[in-house]
Image (cartoon, rainbow, N blue to C red; front, side, top):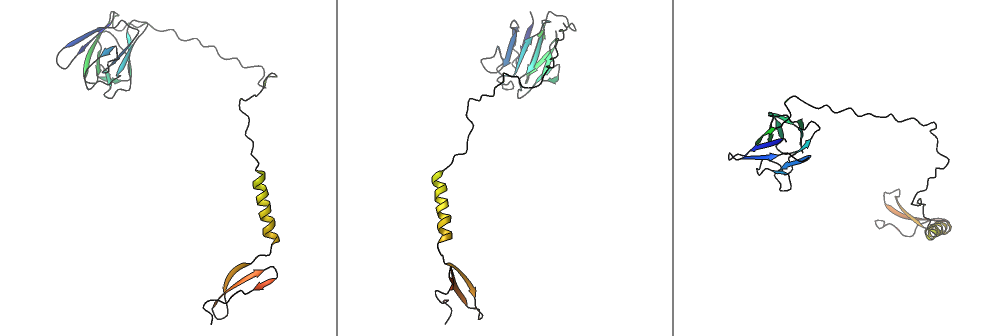
Length: 191
């Protein structure tokens, strides 16, 4: 059975037998291997047993990183004698599998997808949606009000006031009625 020996800063060595298929390493209590050191993230890394009997070490986006034999790694296959560092904590991996011996995994056999004889829509296809399509709502009262406003505005004679200056530069107000122009009052500055 593979094992890992963790060297703590105070000189204490913690030894763990790696008897599970998947082992979590971190500072939080829920991990399989708990390392109580501030440089180790709550969920720092995980070890996954491979067919060879050795483990794949995967860093779980830890703050201070994971190193194997002094190289920063996101994933690394561990072999007998490898030194793994979780943050500032050094550990030594031991395995019964001799160094350099790896079991090669067989390549996955993939079947290519067959192209269909027809790319058209099957005769039994129906496009039934669970929701009705939205239709633009009609507002009969709003349409009536707009129609009446347009009708009354165009049929009623109105007076539209506008200002202009006369020949002497004085301001005058005029009202345009349906029958013609009308001058309702004299400008304030006219004498």
